[in-house]
Length: 606
Image (cartoon, rainbow, N blue to C red; front, side, top):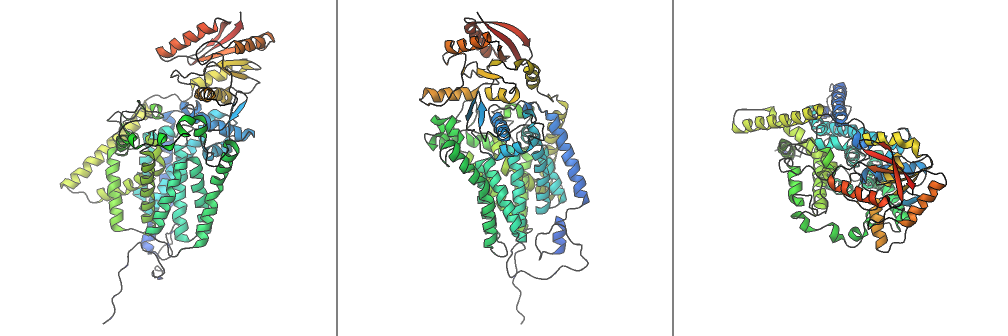
């Protein structure tokens, strides 16, 4: 009796895999998964001219939606101080000052790691050395993320799935809003997707170059946001569950060399500027919270009880609502960064049907075991997302954007799930349910897209334009302001202008000076570093010494101006009135210009 051949898994790779070649008349594939794969299966992964056309249309559509969102947030470097810090580090890298914040003549370490600022600094000269244009880097990475997701989904599944996945990402409200801002979320997503592509290629082709590039990209991702290091767990899980044909020590070493380059740079910067490779900028600026003990930053109680009154729900419910696409229904959209990016949105990341189709896509892929790369990408993405949730669920600050770098697997699986569910519809209850989900999904995306295209959004920032308009008057002058001094250094700096804070209190202002407030809190606890001067003391009284210094400047012919942001609420207005009455004790003020966003006064000593 002839021996029966042993059945093998379709995605199992190893030394015993068949060495048979595809038929001679089969067309070669420009993107192949492995040399031993069946030609018909490999043809699924071919990148052809039609893919170029589809990508061009999707990217054009995404760019239209991004432009409809408006670039005012990006130009204003909002949110303050987050985007301001990213921009400041990039500008100071370009100026040769190093990865620091620099305002009022003093340098301080930033809160954030150096990865994203290095990307901004590389583009800064191309953007004409204009900080308000740095948002263009984020826009570019958004397009890279969409294109990368298309390629990854095409590799994993097929062209219809890739098209749907890219469209789902391109119409995500949070993704679109963050794409116009100088924030690291969208660049982190782009870097992660490209890293996954190189990871799959390195394993299938046993490429040392791809391994080194993958390590470099993962290292960049870690220096963009430390929690992106969770992708390493996903990569290890993918490589162990779906093993390559043979383990190559050389590949692992080249990956490690590529990976360590940028984290080692970050460790050296921490040692140089903060005194320890394990230190971080958050501990410098907020030592009472970050330096004392980790349980203040991470608590299991945050799962059920929000750390801040602005949050309506504990972390578990907040992330559950976002990941199910129903956060808008429960009033969980207008928090933190989301207060501007999701003004007209009805969900933050995706609508509810995307979750259902993603689950179906994962189920179908696991059941059919399409190929090694598909399974590796699934295990990698799902593990990465799970670890990110484990990290952020007990974290004191909750925002769905923290999940964005790992959501590529949700969009890719949803694209495949949509294709599988609609491939053979019938009028049984399952078919009716799929049709209902299709209608809800299409309706949600159409409504969101239509509202974004038809709702007017400021294309340019009035605040930046007004500050630029008064900038010529600030030449060789002293400017006292309640606007962030670091922001003013970036937007109105140069021309030998000296900046002085109005006060160190926050009062809930839209452009509040958090850095000054944090520095004065450190000083009150015994910190001996340099603190920029303010005209008003922390208690609200006039600083007589600083007032005399400003009066001396005026006598020497150096004009002294006061720039204030126009109040947007009654509390802010009341505080500003009290501040003006205190200034009246020493100075008279002459209105130079009043604009919708700011007002400029000339201060003269009595």
